[in-house]
Length: 180
Image 1 (spheres, one colour):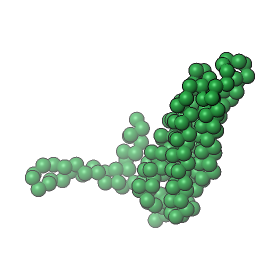
Image 2 (tube, helix red, strand yellow; image 1 turned 90 degrees about the horizontal axis):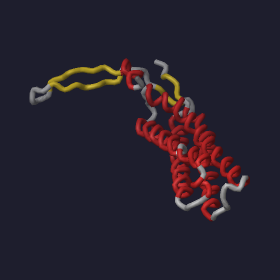
Image 3 (cartoon, rainbow, N blue to C red; image 1 turned 90 degrees about the vertical axis):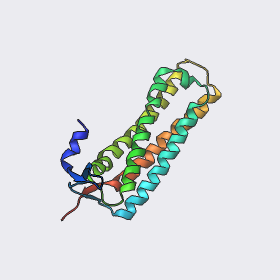
Image 4 (cartoon, helix red, strand yellow; image 1 turned 180 degrees about the horizontal axis):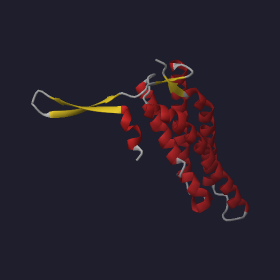
């Protein structure tokens, strides 16, 4: 269903190539979008957000390496593992938007206007939930404070702070339709 959302924005045309085979080509006929703050400011914001998501991914992966009480507690680890989804989705959306330049199609504009802000919220919320769960687990005595717990706390704080930094930049990626 999601793929059909943008189907009316494209036109299919059949052409004959030099070998006599029929080739189907697609052409975008929908509206184009531009960033409201300008292309240079948006490119800078995209570059910074890609750096933040890279650092968030690094913090996420490093905090999973050692054995810790957090890795043994389900209500701590489950929300933290889902942190990989907003990291991956936001990185993919930012790379797509960056590859198109200043002239966005409707799908990329929807990613800039809807997916990136949503991923920023989830990237802040999921590690924060894990940190709260880690505090509960350590307070209630579900395990001893292991050296890996310190690395987990630093990594989760790093991932959450990357979500906070990305959410400060998300307003620069607002796209609106071009006026003809």
